[in-house]
Structures are given as structure tokens and as C-alpha cells.
Image (cartoon, rainbow, N blue to C red; front, side, top):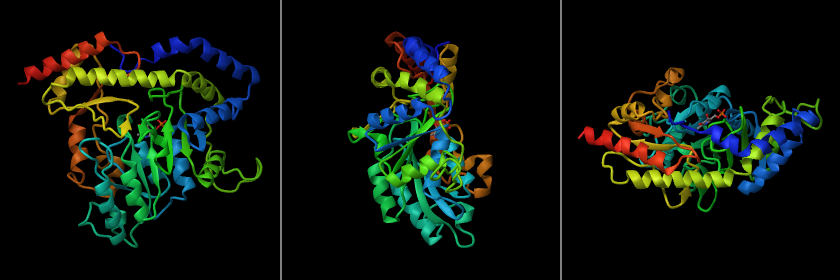
Length: 391
Ligand SMILES: Cc1ncc(COP(=O)(O)O)c(C=O)c1O
């Protein structure tokens, strides 16, 4: 079986450096907030050009930090896409706020700015005829627009210029869920800089992954960064036992910071290799009618967390790939408004047709920096043959 993501090939490449860094942590034994955490934050801030990087225990915690720093809570509406991993919406609900889903663009799978405008207006005017709304938006005093969380699905940045222009009209900040897009670019800068605050994940399968859970928040806003730093440490104030606010235990382990420092050294090269793999796939599959390739807009460079195709014959193609020893995965088979966890929001089938259609047709094929051209060729040939058989 071809690996879907080849973490072992990466570890073999950096093993000595990584072991050296882990040994250094074992020696100084500062496992919580050791010097590697600050070193990593400085390197990540420099890599992205952001004024601040605040690491966290996971990507989910990074999102929580951002929302808590923005004081999101009960009665608030947070606008986001239904075509994402549950963590994006889960954090909104955990804080007592309500996710207001906004459908995706067909081409990019990311939140559609024109629909965001409708959704914001619908919440403000408590008018469901403008946009499908969750039950709490229509009862009592309704909801107050508080924030937008855009998701850079599969590694491709959302359209932040358009999103921020619309959000600004309603006075709400834009958060990037950049869990899948660390390293991506948007209009020539690192994409994490495009939002008011961006949150990424270092889950092992992400473009920059550690050996467990980890995450980070990026922002140019001094106040938001200070709030995130406090919240991740139990709301710490002037000193360790001064608690300025209710916070979390959301620190990145020193050991994971050490691992990430080793991985960061080869990250630029790995990103380049991911781009080469994506270009090879797209060149080989270009003439395949009936299979939609991932978008490659001119103003953005994906981090290629996934290489995701779309076909009405998805099931047949996935079965052929499986027979051939190639794994493929559907991200995501059920949009969030149709999840049991969100049944009480009372969304209906058809509320978000683009997300629902995409969930029936997308599938991701192996993507990592260590895929060679012969393997890529074999995978593409299998997809081509499967498509020809369905004609
Ligand atoms: C879009 C998205 N948001 C949030 C997360 C949560 O990240 P983590 O697993 O590090 O908590 C993930 C990762 O799984 C993700 O893909």
C-alpha cells in the first residue's frame, strides 16, 4: 500500500537533528514552556512575517484562544463554512456562541464572500428569507455578529481581501482557520497575515506537523497576542498566581517545540516539493473530462495539505484506487450543518447546496513531499482507467 502521507521518509531525513534537539530537552528538563517554545515562536514569526506567534497545545486550542481573545460568548454569531473539520465550529459552540454557516464557493471549496454578506445581513435583520439561519438567530433577541472564521481548505487560502471588506462593514474581525494551510501564500505574503488573527495546527499529518498535538496563533495585533498568551496559561496576569481572566491550559509542550524546530529547517523545501507533486498530478490528469482538478488561483499558493479531486464517479474511482493499493480519503463526507451534533440548529437538507454537493464528490489522493514521479504516474493511470470504464 502506498502511504497517504509519508511521515517516516521525513523523519529519516532529519532524524539526527531531531534526536539532538530532543536530547537537549531531556537534559535541561524544562518540559513546560522551556526555551525551545520561545525559540520556535521567534522562528515562526520570522518565517511568516507576523508580529506575533503564540504557540498552543493544538489547532483546536489555537482557535479557542483566538475566539476567547476576541471575547466571543453567548448571544454571539460566528460565521463559518459548513465544509470543514468539526473543530472549526466546535470551538464556537464551546464558548456558548452559535455557528452561522455560510456556503462555499464551488471552485475553491472555501467560504463564499458574497454569501457572507447575505448571512451577516440576515442575522442583523433576523430575516431568514435572506440566508438560512440557525434556530437561535431567530428566537428572542437573536444573535450579534461577532466574528468570521474562514477555513483554508486543503491548504488553499480563502479570499481574505473580499471577506475582510465585507466583515469590516459589520465591524467584525476575520479569523483564519489555517490548520491545513501553514506555509500557503496569499497575494505574495504568507497567508496567515491576511486575516486579523490566524490559527494553525501542527497535528502530525499537517504540512508542518509535530509528533503529537500542537498549534499556533499568528497576529499583528499586540492586544490580541497578549490576550492569547495570557489565556493559554490559565489567564495569567502580572505573575504566576495572578489570574487576570478565565483561561485554559493550552501550552505547546517543549518537546514538540524542539521537534518543530528540526522540521522547520526543511519546511521550505518540503513546501516546494508539495507544489511540484501537485503540478505533476495536475499535468497528468489535465485532460480527464469528468474529474475536476484542485484550483490554482493566481493570487494564492496552496500549502497542499491535500490534493483533492472531484468527480460524480467518486465511489468507482476510489474502489479502483483501493484495488490498486492506493489509499484515498473523503474530506469531508458530511457537512457540519448535517451533523447530529448540530441538529438543534435546525438547518435543513439543501441549506448549503454547494457544501452538500462537494461532500458527495470530493476525494483526496496521496500527497506528501516524498512522492516520486513514477508513483504519481501510477496513481493517475489508475484514475484514468477507472474514468474510461465508466464511459
Ligand atoms: C480545518 C481544521 N481546523 C481545525 C483543526 C484542529 O486542529 P488540531 O487537530 O490540531 O486540534 C483541523 C485539524 O485536524 C482542521 O483540519
